[in-house]
Image 1 (cartoon, rainbow, N blue to C red):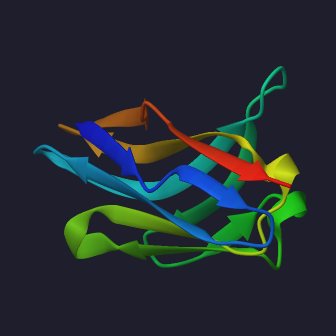
Image 2 (cartoon, rainbow, N blue to C red):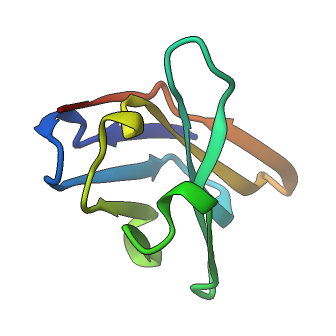
Image 3 (cartoon, rainbow, N blue to C red):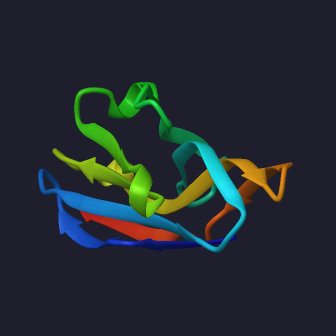
Length: 118
């Protein structure tokens, strides 16, 4: 199973970005798709997650500004980031939990950089 994240870039404070994470391959199913981020010099933290049935959860610092959605037919999750702040600057990673060939899987994507200028 491969993950391809896209949509990162440079944006001014107050702006928006939309990230996408697409999973490809065969013999797999995804229960949860999530986004994490790692600011420079800090630990990786949860940004948002979404289950196959659409239940979501968010990190406290992004509640009310970010939304997450998912297209199960395309095995793709989207992270809409609004009202971006300089402190949102980080490398954003996609993560999926599910099953691959009947066994549990937990995969990380390579990450996409988001930089918010003040």
